[in-house]
Length: 582
Image (tube, rainbow, N blue to C red):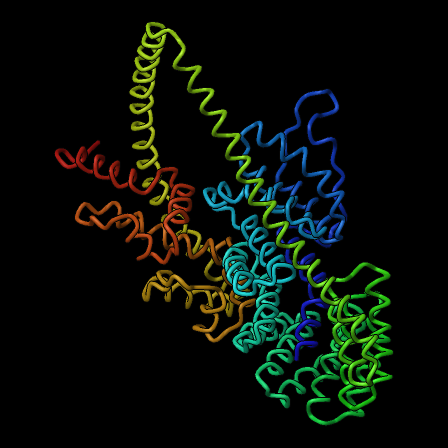
């Protein structure tokens, strides 16, 4: 069991880390050529195009060109901090941190993540938060071996990922399955089956393969060898079945061995060894799995031979973290055949290397804490020095400066408040007029185009009308777990067909379509003088999962925050009431 559990981690780590972290950009596109990020050709400061930078960084991440990515993103990060461009700095810091994670440099990784996590949360930047949590989760899984913390990080990453890229969610689900597997926890079966179902839904052989492999691992943990065998055999029937990373042969062999089908198991162990190149971590674990199998059968010479072959790769490529347990299995094998001298030699080496592996992680954690303490200490010293300088200034000069400043500030605030009040009121009036004109225009377009739509898009139109009825009559948009998949199930159709109908007749995405109903209902309730529902309760009522998202969407649509819209709508109504005119 321990062998397969370790194999799961090593064969999936490299693939998942590279693909999940680059899901925010066009990973399949070639790198975008960019100029020096700090200056333009004429010596002026460059203006950053975050979308273009994101595509470029994502491309480098997907190709694992991590050092180049760091060299490219660092100047952008520094300049963005100097200019106060928080979003650009957060995105750059996320890519730099994930690159250091890929290079196994946790001190540098944590340095950048510590700097950007706060601003990322304040700005509700889901993609950088997904990168941060997923990278830290992988670090806890691979090196700190803190599986509970890894699971916590992966679920945080999954929540942010589903807001920006639903397709990438299955990659983080794979990490969740890995963490469950290492905890010997069969609760990872549900996300494993979700991966498999998503692969079938999207007709993607690669995702189906990974889903089947993950599901086989989970059934193996649960002791259901028949189902584990069923799913592992499904992987062999797919075009994605291949050697190298994600090779399923070692698990196939372990399942067959536990079922007592030794001859077939040995075939897959041998296949795992010959088909795992150039993935050395998978090859190491394949040698170990085959060696364990042979030793259980009493063939200690064959087992030792496989252990030594795996150990040669460990020492040649300095992969002690992945293969240090080979020293322990060699010690056990030599003990079984009476070679106590060899057993003692390998046991000593095992303890020496194991202590080194885990002490490195402890030292890194200590260094990280020490670095944070020293930074805080320096910041406190600077603040104390500045405070002493301020106290040394002449009291009269200070009082005069403060008085002038307060006077100017008060005047400016008063003028800005008056101007902002007038602006908000005008925005509310304009938005109300816009809604009326939009309804009239929609009625005319519906009347003029109804016949043609009936001829060309009858089925799509009928589906869209049914969806509209769900929204208007049953207020489906108020469901806070509403997705296009759940709506499709209500309408007995599939996600793609429903998406086409929404795009065709609303001119926007499903999320944008749902948001129009929510904002329209919010405007109706906020304009009602008898409705005093608190803004947070209103956001929950309308189906928003958090208050910042409601504020952002409402202000984007109307130009006014919800609470201010309510105030201005009431003022406009109070002015109209006496004579019926503004």
